[in-house]
Amino acid sequence: MPSDPVSCPVCQAPAGKILEISGTVPPVRLFSLCRCPSCGFSFVPDYRTDYDVVYSEAYYRGQGSDPLANYLFDHQEPAATLRRYEWSGLLEVFRTLSPAPPDKAKWLDYGCGLGSLVRYGRERGVNIFGCDPYGAAAGKGKLPEDGRYLDPYILAREDLQREGFDYVTAVEVIEHTADPVAFLGEIRPLLKPGGVLFLTTGNAKPFRNKFTRWSYAVCPDIHVSFFEPETLALALEKAGFRPEFRGYVKGFTEIIKYKILKNLKFTRRSRLFDLLPWPVLSRLADAKYRVTAHPVGVAA
Ligand SMILES: [Zn+2]
Image (cartoon, rainbow, N blue to C red; front, side, top):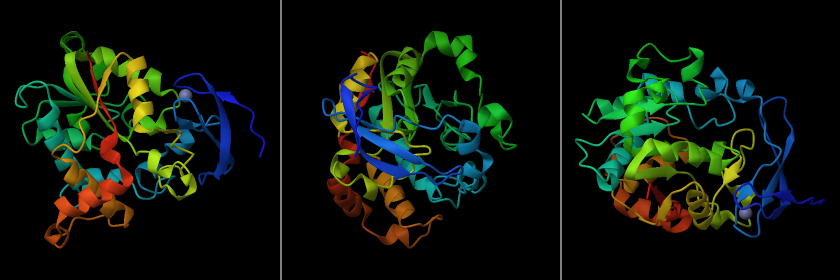
C-alpha cells in the first residue's frame, strides 16, 4: 500500500497510511486512515468538507452516516429515547467533576446539536447552556420549535464570555474535528481558571490493530480523529489544559449502559433493561473498551 507521509495534526511528526476505509454517504469514496507513530493519533487526512451534505437533515434523523444516532427522535421523544441514560450519566459526571457546587456551577455543552442535553439539565435545575458553533443544526433554522433552551449565539453574549464557565462538555464531538488542538483551543478561553472540560470519545487504543472492526472508525464521512488516552492528553496540553486521568467516575455506568444498548441497536428505554446489573456490565465493557481511560482537561 502506498504510504506518503502526512503531518500529524497533533504533534506534526510524519504519519503513514495504515489502511483505506469506504464512506457510505454519496458521493461514496475511499478515505485514507493514517496513524502517527510518535503520538498515537489516528486520523483521516482526506476528510470531507461538504458539511451541508454529510450533516444534512437526514443525518439528524438517523438516516445519514451514523444510522445508530437519531437526534431528532432523541429531541422529540425525550422520555422514550435510549439516550436518556446518557444524559442521566452526564449529569452525574457533572456533579462529580464540577469544580464549583453543582447548584451554582455554570455548564456549557459545546457542540450541543439540537440541545437535548441542555433541556434535560435545565429541567433538573442545572445552570446549563448550549452552543453549536459548527452550526449544522442551530445555525440553519433546523432547530425544533422548543429550541428556546438554546442560544446558538451564546458565545457572543458578553456576560457569559466575561465570567466564563465552570464546566464544559463536548459529548462525542472531537472525533468530528480535523484539527483537534484548534478545537480544544476554542474551548480553553471559555473556562474559568480551574474549570473542567469533560470530553467523551472512543478510545482507539484497544483497536490499534483492528480499526475496521471499530464502530467509530467505519464512518469516515464524519469521524476523522481517533484518540488513544495519551494522545488526547497531548492535544489537551497543546491547547493549554492540564490533562487529568480521573478514571471511572460516578455516572459512567449510565453512559456506558447507553453505549452498549445503542450498539445492540436498541433505540428506546425499557424497564427490562433496568433489571440488569449495570454497575457490573458497564465495568466489564469498560475493561474491554477503556472509554474511561481518557483524560479530562483542567484549565490550569
Ligand atoms: Zn502525532
